[in-house]
Image (spheres, rainbow, N blue to C red):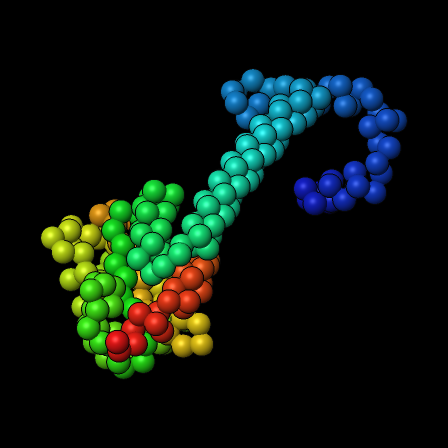
Length: 225
């Protein structure tokens, strides 16, 4: 009768005391060494396997520690950003805080921002309240989550002046409270910075923070004098 490998495995599982009763078999058992061509004893094989498993666990632990440190650092940056938004006493100071913290703390080199309130866009000295197309406003209204990719949409590519031709990746973040009232566009020369399918949780949270901060001023700034 032919004995299959599964039969041997099943036998050892059903008789866990086999090697206690047949110690000599255990001592004489030789297994191929995964690292060279020499055979080693079962106990040596177990030591090698445990060392490899330990190395994998240590690598995983280092990875988890690194992720934890990165999350702590990101949380600290978001905290500083929140404080800067809260401390801004007027619209211009608030805009400066947004630009400065996104560049310095989040290393985002190019930032475009446009704001509106409904269809009315009166004259304003702030470029952020400059003209925007109806198509762009409709796009922002339907953008419930940040969108990332290699192209600037609608007229947003013109917001970056001479730098626009060098930019290779963009993140579009709708600014909204009860309804959308603006669009934040983050851009980079690095094509891998904002790519399709990337996680956008923190981009969305940044957009929410900026939206709440700006909503305090946008109605006053966009109203006719």
